[in-house]
Length: 577
Ligand SMILES: C[S@@+](CC[C@H](N)C(=O)[O-])C[C@H]1O[C@@H](n2cnc3c(N)ncnc32)[C@H](O)[C@@H]1O
Image (cartoon, rainbow, N blue to C red; front, side):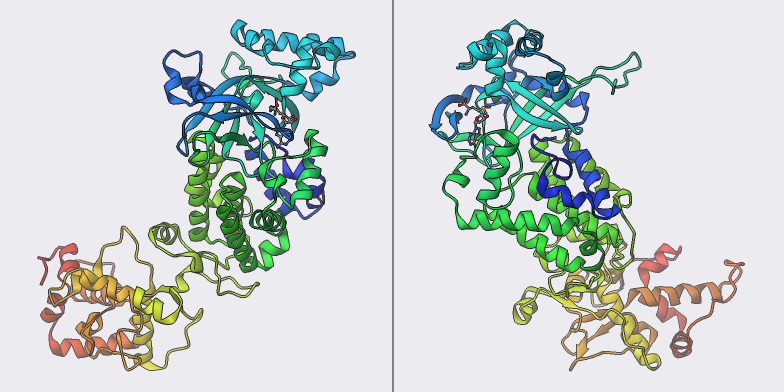
């Protein structure tokens, strides 16, 4: 939808990818749909708020704070700010006139082209016509007044696979930059039938252009947008701008190439191919994530915060989805949509697509092809609240062909992380087989330690604390998987009550709510058959039976007082002990 080419369909560099497997095509199709301008009438209506024709609307934009100024011999005139513009602001939004390539080819002579463009421009209204005719052009004599101006100021775009050219009165002075400070979004208006449905067969009508600030733009800086998303090193970008747009890019990044930008652009070009490759997606997911992490950080370092970065986040989400890793997919999609909200506004087409995937990751193309990354949405949302998740998110510790599931990462406390040099402890994928009841309990205790803390889950561990410390130990326990051990071994409880809360030698409380809760309910059901007539005495593991024997010695009442909140939930008195 931003101007430029559709990577999979128009440029030579991308042509090979089209021949790749279905999956790659699927990826491309998914993105070409959302990146090309699609009919979106309501956005045009929303953008109407910013219309310069609307009285009082100008205060929402910075149109009045822009002046045309000579920039350089390479780029000619550009639009420069007369005051600073905060990131995310709409710099200007305006109606644009446009023609499709087909309409141009339909004309037999330059005179016909001029007449066709004249009709388009007149349709924009008198004021627009007047300002259009005031644009200077040396081609008026050769091509005719309208075509002469049009030719100099049009921006070529691709929409739904159709090549077109647009002209806007402010846009006419906005230059391209490979590292732009603004994002350009084009909104199309399509004719509607009597039922309000878009007449897809008809050429779109006049659309609007919205230019948003991608960063804080200081006074006296030129407003630039990406006519195309530059990738590769300067020579490659120059070649592309020449073949596709008819000028040798003379933006700052191309005139004075800096290593940091050149490396980022080159990496971006390579990583885009890596992320699109079906073998990477399927066989080398960790390599894909690591490459993505590197390129994102490089792009951001160069202040490139546009759809290129959002696209990488989105592609990572698709790779995670391919492996049923909902948690990572959600995180990646959240990153993408937050960035797109600034780029496109909350009603942008790409933004809306990503938001749909964020809400229902299962509808992403290719979702669930393998179950290597199996995780839950809750794990993903919890991760959004975590700091320093890079290691877990991008699986930096994994070998290229590995996939480390989210639940294996156990977050360490700051002190421990500093000591270990890593934020997470990587738990084994398949725990070793437990030997006897003791091992089983050990295993169970460790499971409960790294089980994701669900936001909306009842905070069982807090309620089972007997020492009156309330919530204080929950975080400690989470941070210290091995802290419930004394000399490296877990404190194994001897009685039922001790399995739930156990003071360690270090004075910390061990919690094992999941197992005990189940046992407790089973016991309750067994003891109250009249209340639970359907109860068929479930098979209780050996360990539980032993525990029960021991506990029966101790007495049921004591067990109940250990679990006041559970009892409350089951109709008992409840309350903290
Ligand atoms: C919409 S006009 C922008 C205003 C134009 N610079 C002028 O002097 O009128 C687009 C044209 O500006 C030139 N241009 C824009 N960005 C450029 C860039 N990065 N390098 C070189 N020329 C550029 C190209 O000739 C392009 O066709």
